[in-house]
Image (cartoon, rainbow, N blue to C red; front, top):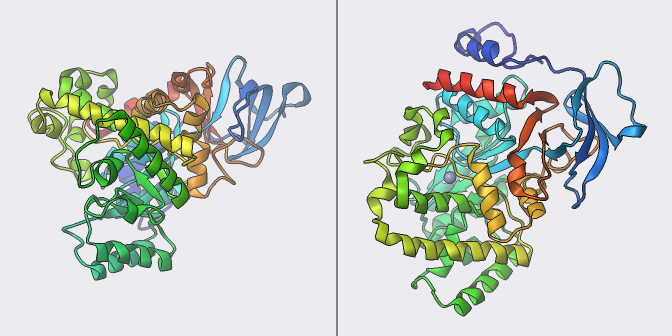
Length: 462
Ligand SMILES: [Zn+2]
C-alpha cells in the first residue's frame, strides 16, 4: 500500500497526474510494520478508566497488544513513540461533516483539517458521486485520510414531492453505495412514509432533520439519527405553539420528549456549537472571522458554493444570519439555545445515545477545529468529560456498527488513535492538546499534521 495514490497505469493516469502532487507533497514516512507507544496512559473507552504505564503495540493497521510496559518487549523493528506523561484515546469521530461536493483539492484540505484535530472518521451529511469515489479510495488505501461515511443528497421538498420520487431515489442511492439516506427538510406524510418503507426493504438507514411540518412523533423510532437538537425546537417545543418560557413547563417537555426518544431507539447528534456560532455571528461576526483557524480556509470555501449552499456566505453582505436577524433577536436565540442545552442533559439522563457532530461550512463553523467547540458545549450542557468522549468515539462506533474495529482501544482494533499531553477526563479541552495521531497505524506528529495542512491549504487556493 502506498501512502496516497496507488501506482497504477492505464485509464487512471490522467486523474493520477492531477493528483500526484498530493502523493509527493503530503507523503510522510512509510507505514512501518510495527509502532509502539511506550509508557502511556490508555483511556480505552470501554469503561471509565485510565490504564497507566501501558505499552501499545501496533502492527500494520491494527493494535497488536495493550499491556503493562514492564511485561512488554518491544520488537526491534518497531518505531517507538514516547507515551510518558501522555494519554492515548481512540480517534475522534465527527458525526456531521460536509465535504466539498466536487473539487478534490478542497475535499483534501477538509480531510487534513479533520485529521489535524484528531478526527479519524467523519460522517458526511450530503453526498455526491465524487465524495463516494473519495470514500472508496480511502477505504481501499489509495488515498490517505480519515475514514468517511456518506449520506446521499438532501431528501426534501420541492425536489421530492411524491412517494414515487422518494422511492426511486432511495433505491438509486442504495445501489450507488451510499451509507445513509439524508432527510433535510419538509416532506408530505406520504413521501416520508414511503422513505421508510423503501429504506427498510433496501436495508439502508435514514438520518437527518425532522420534517418540521410533520412533528417529532413522525421521526422517532423511524429515523436512526436526528441531527441538531435544534430540530426538537421546531418539531416539538415550538410545534404549532410559541417557544415555552416557563421553567417548569420546559422541564416537563424535556423529560417527556427525552423519555420517548429513548424508548424509540432513535439517536441524537445535538450539534450545539453550530447554533451557538449563529448567535455569536449575529452579535459580532467580525471577531469570529478573525479567529486564527480562519487562515486555513481559502476565501473560495467561505461562500457556501463548494458544499452546494450558495446562500450560505460567511462574510458580509452575504452572511444569512446577519441579514436575517438584528441584534435585538439575540435574547430569543439564547432562549432557544438554553432549551437545546437542557434537552441534551435530559436526553443523557434518559439514556439516549449522543453523538458529537459539528456541521462545518455553516457560516463560521470551521471543519475539524469545530470539534473543540462542540465537545466543550456538550460538556457545558452537563455531560461529564467521559460522556463527552463517548459521544466523540465509542458511541459513534456503535452507531456505525463498527465497534468491532474502532471506537475503543483494545487488541485487534484498527489503530486510529490520538496521543494527548494532558488527561482529557480532567478537562475536555485537553482532548485538543495533541502530540500526534495514528491513522490506521501510521503515525503523524502534530508538526507533520500542521505541515500537511499548510500544503493542502496552498493547493486549495490559500
Ligand atoms: Zn449539515
